[in-house]
Image (cartoon, rainbow, N blue to C red; front, side):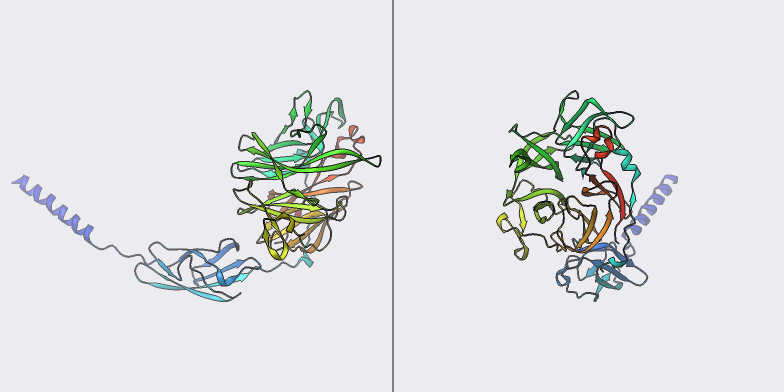
Length: 447
């Protein structure tokens, strides 16, 4: 009898369990919008207020609000109308209503306001320039690369930074900052790789007799390092191929070609050298800028004092393909002969640094090649036009300075690191290495 009772009890429990499993669970009442994004146009994060069921979002200047396709994430098992990814038609500052329906059928109307991001008032902007003692300390070196110009930086995917230099001294430095004469070499291009506060020098030749890292096939020529960019699992470094020639009895530099060295990542193994388009005196590769969709290469034509800027681009992942060139009203074209200058508020130097900040582009550049003024301009697109000239800083530590370069990977809040080269007597630098060491400052960028 007891076995029968136990079996009956087990059967009762099983039936009860089955009844519980067959009961309909409560349906979700969640009808919140969890995220709202407008790809490629949005500035900052959307401001979502669940209490008032409102969303405010800013987009870049020039955004066509009649063709945006917001990507929207809602509560689990809820639906939304208009649907995520559906094109909507908006006017600046207008409001569109989205209806979120929970699984339970409960609805919530959300009011979404899309606004054009306002331009800051640069009349009251203060760059608040201060020297950067940390990076000045990094570049006060006693072996390997110890002085030179350029100091162009490229952030690698693994967090390291590549520093490229043009004419440079490599070797040993005495504690009093004089050079060790029999252990000093002057070469035309050098690389340093930074990992945290550690720097390692990379050059050609041997440690006893260093040579340039990159050397042309023609022994009469040499490469000056410029800048570069990362594309996929490769690093592209831009170079100028030059030759010292006599013109009317004077030493001058003949510019023969522009090149691009391709290195594999992360091992930095050299793969090959590519040609960069170089025609009509337009030289691309002074500075590069990546925005995720394209790698941009700035070019210039001029004599250093009255330069004109140009810009080319290659789609991400296609650095080896034919570039596109900005051609003004024609937009982006494949034909380099149609390339036109970037519209600027004034003539400037070469090697502009581009900073994408809150949906607009800030250009950092010297007034001309040998100048004491470091300038900033603003645009809504990489190709300009660039307006709103602001003088960030006037250098005072040399008769002339040049190549003001921004390094956005080392931003501290809205404080941008800028390095610049100083024009000193190269022969006097044997007695004082610091004559040819780049200087570093930080400036506050506009919001």
